[in-house]
Length: 370
Image 1 (tube, helix red, strand yellow):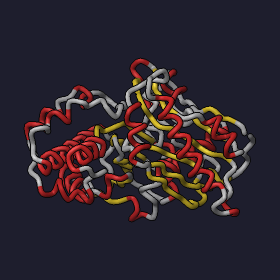
Image 2 (cartoon, rainbow, N blue to C red):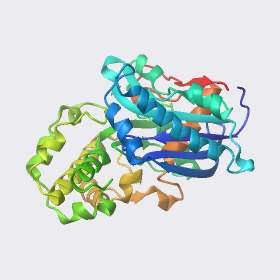
Image 3 (cartoon, rainbow, N blue to C red):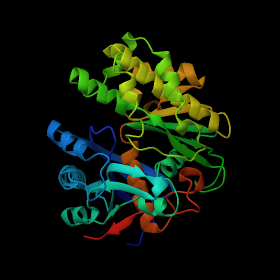
Image 4 (tube, helix red, strand yellow):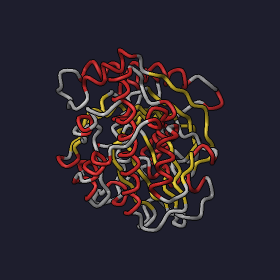
């Protein structure tokens, strides 16, 4: 499709926290954000979450992948269909569908996001851009994170002038260092992005296993506990933290972490896992080209008051909820894939050497027509 100006794009994101699907509308030409539109959310049921969880770590031929894909497609189709007709004045002309990451192994040039974008294009009767990560991985990149180009546009939208870090605390944490003095995200020095380490996923898994709750609301359990310093020290000795970015993680790259807190009380285990999250972000700050003026936090982890407090203490940088700047921290990644969908349709790059380590600027994504 030919895009000559700003259009309404609809993006969807289902993250590694396995809580549900976010969907959001964005008015953009793939370079400048002109307006933010409506958003919506569809939580996974316990059965749907279990269906996807069984397939985690599996590649396309895995025994549980077909059922997980059906779950992902069904939930996305219902939510996106609802969003397509939510407001006639914000009717999207293109959809960005990320799919559900089940496995990620960029060192072997492979990544797996399940869900068929071509099927969704048929159901929605709208062009769908999907499979955003494969091209980057096949060209030697990490395939993640992919929101940095959108973060650059957000910094411009907010008229920021000083280097700023966008921190997303989903199942896995990731950072984008943005220097808004540059003209374009692919300019050398404009961006640096990488995964920081486990964020919500280990805490959510702990809460589900021990208290049959999806997460530690407000970080209240962690706030009651005591950190096991030996566990945190051992965690931070992992080889990943010694790698030079860009670099990325799979949700299950730190499978040794749950056993390390297995003998701790619920509160102490939650406090220790929260400290691991904050410590990994603090370590990430050491890689920043310039000291950032602030860290703007998005994703579910920003609602964990205990983690936010620990981030402030360990980084020594001003830490703020991105909502305080008028952005929607719950929907930033869904908006990012709306933005990236337009970039793909226009043939613009979606990642570059400083965001994924790919050899050259690359525009990922497959466009499926209805």
